[in-house]
Image 1 (cartoon, helix red, strand yellow):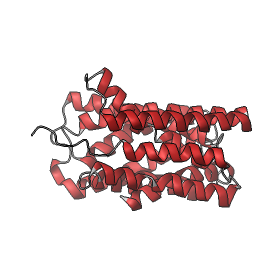
Image 2 (cartoon, one colour; image 1 turned 90 degrees about the vertical axis):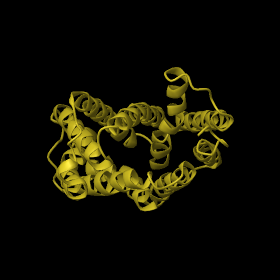
Image 3 (cartoon, rainbow, N blue to C red; image 1 turned 60 degrees about the vertical axis):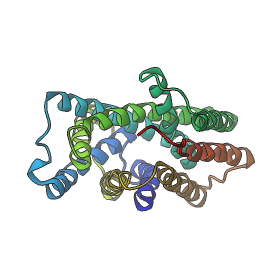
Image 4 (tube, rainbow, N blue to C red; image 1 turned 30 degrees about the vertical axis):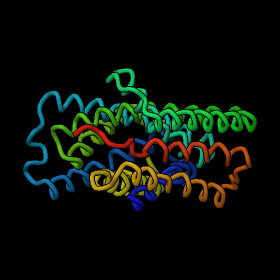
Length: 282
């Protein structure tokens, strides 16, 4: 879980490298992240699950894979655009807001009631995000736009999580991830074709595909089945910590006191949201 989170944490840096050194636009780097990962994920699915990898798939499952892929494509598209417009730390923190949007889905669609930890987490997250957005607005309108794009990415990622969870009713983790990634790559192709698509240096885009999509997502998808939600939440905090360190060391993005306060509120919300609720009915 920690290794997968660390791999994902370097994603924003690789997106910037793809833009500056590989001469690939943000939508194109999102496409390559998906497209180059597909053969590896299909191979892993075949090795791990064998002939039964896609045996349970029906028409409904195919539609769920398309929905998951479309949502993931939207997530990567707006997130990559946002990464180039805000700090690495903010881009990672805002993208993790999916943690707080899932309870809203449960309350509105599934008629679940907010638990006390969820209520405190949502309040802390709202305060932290407001602080971060306010500081970005003070820095420049470009930073504010970047934060909002990364926040929009979290909405897409929430839809992706819901769709992939339903798809998991028919498929194991790796086949489901492989199908969603394939659908995302197909849907991103026409968007990427309108800009700088062919890399002059394949290192950053290969890093995104192998490091973020195959290793990062693959390890997390495997690990979440063996860990408690609280441990998962704590391990995911590796991402903003590493992103903030890379931003400070590589790009001079040293956070001020208000940014640190906002980030700590979001971090606290990520932990609180995963606290055990107590005894549940069997």
